[in-house]
Amino acid sequence: MSIEEKEQSIIDEFAIYDDWMDKYEYIIELGKDLPLIDESKKTDDRLIKGCQSRVWLDAEKKSGKMHYSADSDAIITKGIIALLIRVLNEEDPKDIAKAELNFIKEIGLQEHLSPTRSNGLVSMVKQMKMNALKQVS
Image (cartoon, rainbow, N blue to C red; front, side, top):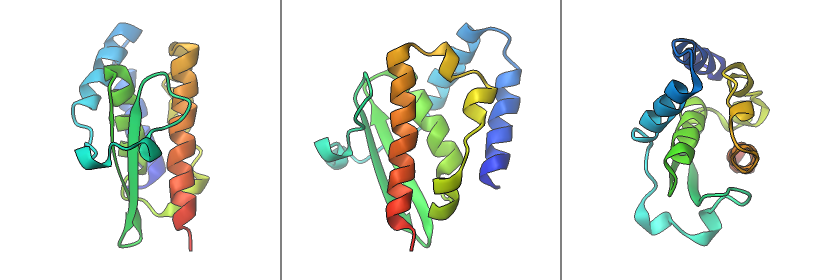
């Protein structure tokens, strides 16, 4: 499944919900399925700068694809990073680096977050893309 197909799947899932309280609940549920970062990797160098809450992100390239794991001390943030990982995990670093991630706008995520959470979302995307760019050969 391509990045765009994964994005469309998320857009379709969010279309089911009419109200943002239901969408927040869904985001929280998604956080429960997050591929968790190993406790030993919850280090300062893996903390995403610019997030209101603490978010650790680990990235490695295996067999030519990026693999992400993460954790956060905030349930909404955990769900947001889970959404990003769902879209970008097991993708080619070049594809991640150029991904538009239109689903964020399509589902209205950024506009329904507080300014500090919205900044955190931008920081998460930036960090995931930077990790992928480092692996482009």
